Length: 437
Image (tube, rainbow, N blue to C red; front, side, top):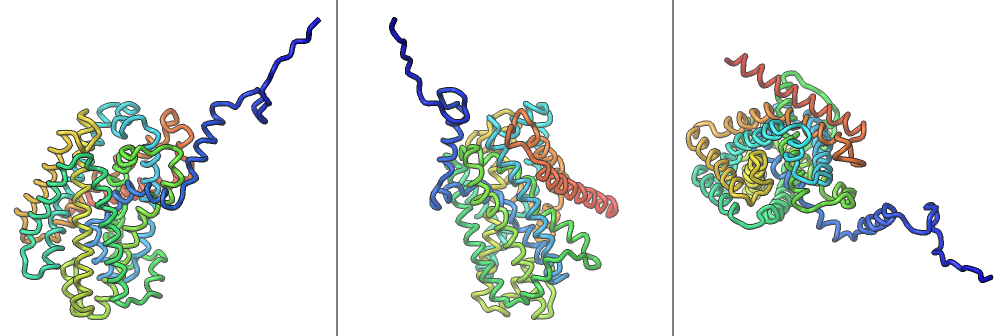
């Protein structure tokens, strides 16, 4: 009688079988992928910085100057709160970009119905139309400050043509992402230098981190939240994440090197503009209701170099916002109409061109009050923002879509706070318009 000998592989602890499960292998592989060097992590920078560049536009700067002019350092805390809310909504959008097998609007159509997805795309498109006005005005004003005596309208036209030329580049998103990261770095340097040249009271600026609401500041607080808590920019981040092919294994590193710093950067720059406005106006005893007035006061106080640096930062803010504004509006309207979720589609390029043409047309028609145009255009965007915020939160809670990356309770809590904030903003704007009528 012969003895039968069977060869069996050694058991793997915790499996109860002689082989490693597929899920275990996947976990090991993903953990190894997450071990990136510092330079490899830097390659993940992108989509959130694009959102931040879009958010940090001329309306943002003009409102910040008004805050520093009217209330000195007291409203810096508003920027901090807005930035925190923006991080949470952007994070939800990043996770949606990772988990959704298709674009965000396509996922909304699939889960909530086609009409809802179409409304979302059209809503973002309408916001970009409003932003296009402020960006066109701001870019012209910025260059006219850099080159005294030149025509803002001429520069507005040239900047619009420059952005239109960018639209013809193939694989446009990757190119734009690199351009905007460079511009954000330039702006950061400009506003940091400007803040130190202005020699502010840093103790008083620190006290501005404590929440206070001086008399007559409510409307300005609402405006600051509206300009710094940019739901449309957060919404578009999912598209950038999808375009870069990010995976769940990338999520932690993306959060640390892109989402958080990409959204904090414009928050810091906005706070620095408030600090500069407060320091400069406090030193001169003059008042300025807009960015042009501040630049005029800042130059004799800080010298030509200081004025030039500040103006350069302002131009960078306007121009860097103009680029993603046109591309995002074109991309998401194209997606809503079922023509594809890419900036490279014909529909997206034509729509982006229309957004640029709209901005320059309104600017040419209403030349007498350019700064008022910036503020009005920025304010109108809050009428659509609550819809986009609600959709991001709802989709980030879809268990069948998000799986393990579904919102946690504390993420939902911050999302609801943000939604309530933009709803209050919309109600305040409608009430103001009805009262004015």
